[in-house]
Amino acid sequence: MTGRPKIACCNFVPDAKHLREFALDNGFDGVDWTLRPEDLPKNGTQPLSLMRRISVLRPLEVRYHLSFKLSDLGHRDKTEAENAVKFFDQACHLVSRLGGRVMTVHVGLGRDSMEEISWEKTLTNLANLAALARTLGIRVCLENLARGWTSRPELYEKLLRKTGCWGTVDIGHAKVCRSVKSQAYEIHDFALPHPERILNAHIYHEETVEGHAPPAKLADLYQRLLLLSTLPLCDWWVLEIREEIGLLQTLRCVLEFLEAAAVRDAI
Image (cartoon, rainbow, N blue to C red; front, side, top):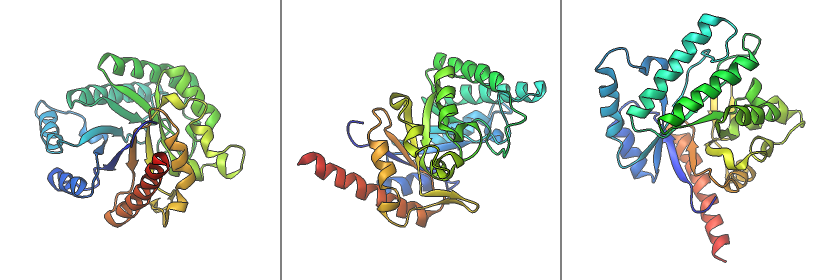
């Protein structure tokens, strides 16, 4: 990656004006806005309301993160799969109307098992979504999760390669997934087979039963941030903490890393 990445926070407070002030006051470059099924248009005025909220965030850049739990494009049940395709297609058009150019999606979000999901159907429908998005000027990024197919680097690589999706590397998920904890793989295996496909990173220490835990110190993140800094197109670093104290602690660690990197580059 050339230059400093853009540092983004989540839309962790509901008031967009407050979020904008917080982000600008603390030096954030953008907002990673999570869309949920209830955000999808149900009438003619709903998209306009959301557009007005998001327009308040200017001049911050906004990218989109779809949180559609238990809604899978590759569900073995025909009706479930058709509903998921409808949800994701609607979301794609909504992101386009909002002026978005990048959106992150998941396979198996909220699932402990992938038994109900078809691999081949997932590949087909995810590739179709990525193709639709391209016609709208949007790049679809697939995120690695702590469980399921995308928690296995060898399957995550296949999903990106076979569907034409880009990637969002979540370093907290990568730290706790079974593939890494068992030492069968290392965290860099999520990114280095396709470094040019990774556009975004989700940054925090690790996922726990309580949620996303912030780092206590830079050392908790250092090696993973070093990996992200080698990815040529990964210029969007989302500090994925949804409470202010932990978010600002994560921000301090990331800025410390970037400042040290700038000093090294200047020598």
